[in-house]
Image 1 (spheres, protein in one colour):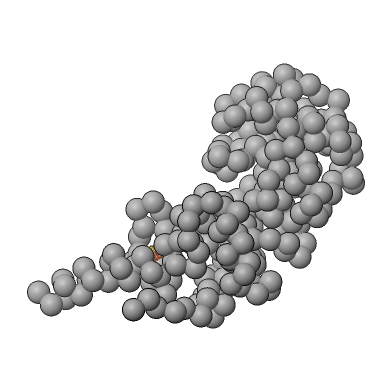
Image 2 (cartoon, helix red, strand yellow):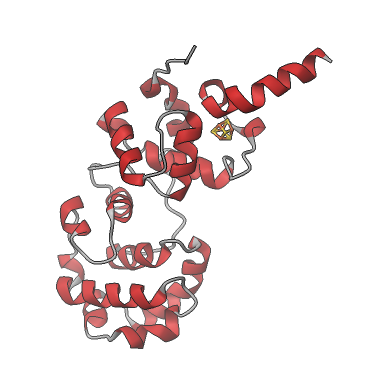
Length: 218
Ligand code: SF4
């Protein structure tokens, strides 16, 4: 029989564990945050942290970036995946936004900018301490949420919608908590023995618990 889980209650320990944990991007202001979030899509955060100081020395704010050509960014970001498109997006964003004070901080306005989807916009709003307008669903959450059984499928937008339906708004930081769990424990090969979500995890219940039971009987 399928197990019915009270997710608002079940997700609490995970949210407690990662409460207030900052994104591992070393930004110092909203401008740097936005640029680094765009660059970090499908790239490792450490890689973006390593190149950021020289990039921001050359382009310290939105105004300086608004005068740049995409090609002038290449020497700083050429090792980033998809750097050609990212250079286009960043210079287009800067031309639209023009100054740091003008950086929009709503989901609609952020997602209207090139290269910023719902995931990036949700991340920027979270890091800026704004009330959540959605739930962060990155590659880790796409793996972790269906394993837990809190959502199904592989489409980030559909997973986000399911999470928003199942969790009250005050728990919408659950996306970031699941992302941290995915980075640290629920890897593609999950380390279930270290995971505090075992008692409610569908994947654990189906794939790991029966083996453990058998081994105990031996
Ligand atoms: S119990 Fe295992 S599969 Fe489930 S969330 Fe934790 S690490 Fe992932």
